[in-house]
Image (cartoon, rainbow, N blue to C red; front, top):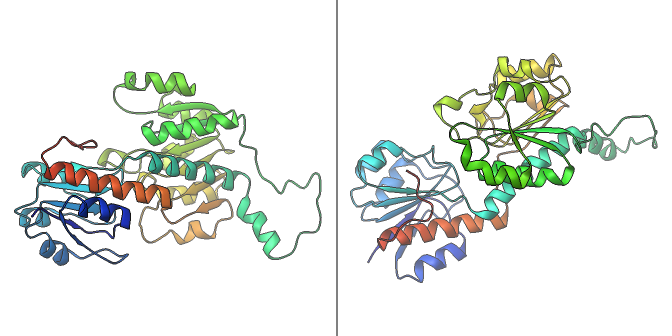
Length: 323
């Protein structure tokens, strides 16, 4: 009998998909991260591994998993996996860029844009403290309007494009920056009305900068002191990609000196630790890496990973293979 080990706790719907195929499922049944020894032990005799972005699949784990044929990662990113070693061993790798995951992450980016721009947390504090003294027409409690502003999307993949589609509802002027062959974005550019712009120029002219790039060595501190210096004083930085894309020390300095207006961060450079200085700042909205943390997205992602693992066991082509 074929066997799948899941290092993440799967919802019932994903478990059923595997069991209906007559495949043995061994699963880490807790909402935490198994240690290396547990993973190695449970991968003995396993044909496929379902992992998650919180689970480090190291060279050692791959080396000791002699029967492993594929790794189905729950999440769009795969930087938690020693991909080079997996490739050397002929182990297939897939991710889960599912529709609901894309939509949920894009929603959260827009949520952060709105929350930080309209000073939602500051105004909620007034209500919670019951210190609202009555509406003042020229009081400016509400922050800045988002509609009709300029938006730069750094990383114009599926999530970046979805952010652009949603931003159209606010009549935003949409720009994007991305490495590589830009011709693959022709259809999305036309649909969304987005314009390509050089990163430096985009940082200079836009009101909101949303980071939605994959994390690579080249993207480490993509936004640092020099880039923050280029942004308008009235601009906001939003990060829904990976924490290390932003130099948080430089961000704190820029915010303290009023170099930019504010920031909304769902991801953090030293996760799970969150920068204590950013936590204290009124012009910053923080969330604990919940971009695609919705019931719809997480269930769909787990189901997609289960289906990919089954495809690999059956010798079928993967739908979301990462090469």
